[in-house]
Image (cartoon, rainbow, N blue to C red):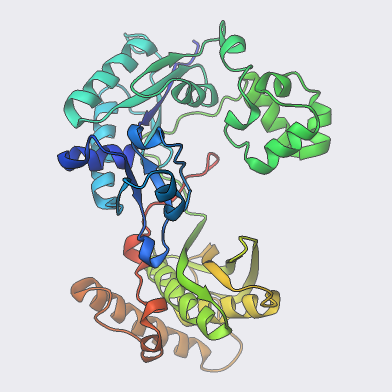
Length: 409
């Protein structure tokens, strides 16, 4: 039996929810973004009216204001978006138990074998979401996940597109390579260099050549373009193993010395350590991401002697990575830190008393976690963080809760 896969994409999700809850801004150009005064200021999403001004996702707020001085910018309300995401999935669950999220606003559904056709189910879901939630969705219907996602992007907003084995060459192959899932800016540039501009060009390329250029990813790209990718849609109860836990931030001002870096890294490491403890995880690989004010960036990682969920150990590792890899040619604008290499067992150091000391530090940080949950994130602060509240007074644990989902988990 041929599979029937849907990809449901909530149109302009954050902005749609905000306009639903704020009637006074529904007929205005609206964007959801950060705080421009603190320079956490990029466009996360925008409504259809704002799209007419060529405002793009990821664009700095100051640049968006230049295009549209009357732009209404509202801060993100992630708990509200998560609630709407869950309500949408309840609707999808009336048709199948195979629902795989791809971020908050996108889901794949496998409706193979249902009494109704994929297009009929899609039209019913589209109608119900609009009537019951007050937002719109675009849905792609196809025989695999890749083409279903292309279908949901093909016609927006509030639309259904069917991509079948009979018409995919007409619909999919003329599209630019960049429209294909997993084809980012760098891959697109390399494909274009070799004269591969459309998905059809990619589909008809020699797999051996693609493998020579992209390694094993060449086989993946060829499979995606030809519609032969056949990964299943996960069951709604399936869980995905966490591969890493991290946080990043764009700072309110440029960081100009190691003291600035350490202050921001400390907040990030405390957030990451808290999230590790909440999930019962310990990791031994620390990765840092650094971007200068010239927008050049790099990533470095190191392996620790022992698995840890202690913020001070993460901070020490992050600072070692930074100081050994950054020459201060330019000030720093953004920082990130993540932990991977998880294990549930402690690995003891050779030095006498080290395990006891680490357990004491973990108990102390766990106690701080409890205080912050009860009395708020800023109820207790390290004295060294009081020296520069501009850099240290942000809360990535509570504010940075939405994370992208990788296609391969």
